[in-house]
Length: 190
Figure 1 (cartoon, rainbow, N blue to C red):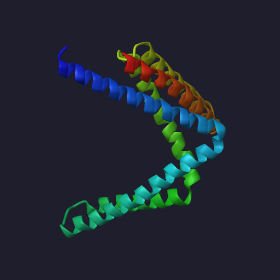
Figure 2: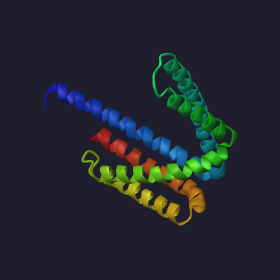
Figure 3: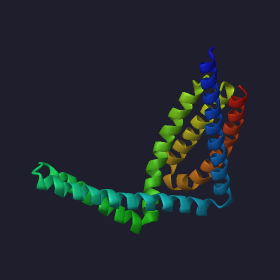
Figure 4: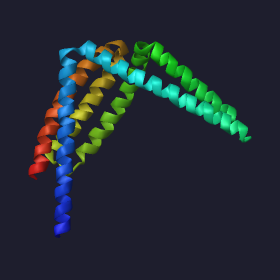
């Protein structure tokens, strides 16, 4: 191995350590907050996300409407579709801001299904991660088990799943965080 390769490996190890450590600490913090005040934490997080998305949709929609009129002035065909898309984005954004909790519940159900898919795929990919050895397998198994637990809850009773999600997310955050912190130190010492 050359000095350059050794330097790159050291930089990669350092970046891996930092990334895993940050992921772990953030996971633990989120998990603890959700355990201490589950309803408050979940409501605040969901409302913040919905409000952010609502404002973004309004700005995006206004930008699209402005662009549609520029298309019209340049005789671009289909400008009406751009305008319709912009108006729809503005209206949905306004709806999200007016009814943030309703939007949060509906959006959370959709997000939970995406989370199931993401956790499962990430878990399968981490099972094959050769860099972390047994800890990579542990992270993969944790992700796959969390995906299965959330999918079962969503399938059997979506309303209960929303409540259970808070606890699952809290426990997942803490367990994943601890494993990620341990893996970070394993990477640093490798």
